[in-house]
Image (cartoon, rainbow over all chains, first blue to last red; front, side):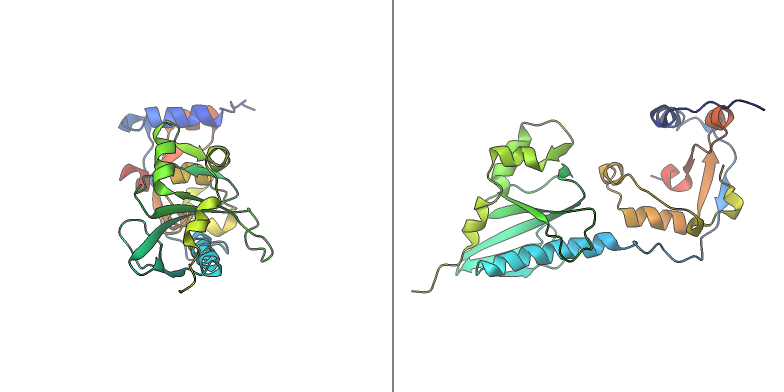
Length: 178
Length: 64
């Protein structure tokens, strides 16, 4: 009976990356045929969750009286456009997180009247009673905050200790007609 | 060790490191599509010899 080493996953990963450009390090390819089995039951959940997050933000905006609607394939990460009054519009980039409040940072537009809203679902997100944690920041404020950071991930709770994660909603409250 | 010639993804439970995938701008559904649509496995000789496991890479990684 031969004793086999159990290498740590990190060591295996390093070794594989180091060998990436060395053809001699790899065995001949084994072709795995496409599967006829159905996709797992949880397949497609991210699309549903993204849509759920956008509609959640929309529902909050309408509770505030904003005229808001989803955008379609907007090229600049604008998921929602909201009109407060004639000539005054806001745009929102909705980020969806599940089971975490750590955001893997990605580039975003930082400009006036543009907001980022983070909708954080619990892991058991399909529970209808579960309410997501929501953070909203003006994109310029968040842009200034992350500009000083070098990490690839951003703790939303850490941001919330410096920047109020709720007050930006006030800017969407519709003013009653005169 | 996985017998790749008879590999059927339905026989496995998958658990993805979603933060790692997100770091490479890969969605979980995209990872599923790679697994379900067929791929080439290249086993790493040294890792296989050391662990008898199937540390390797896929053709999808080769083309990225």
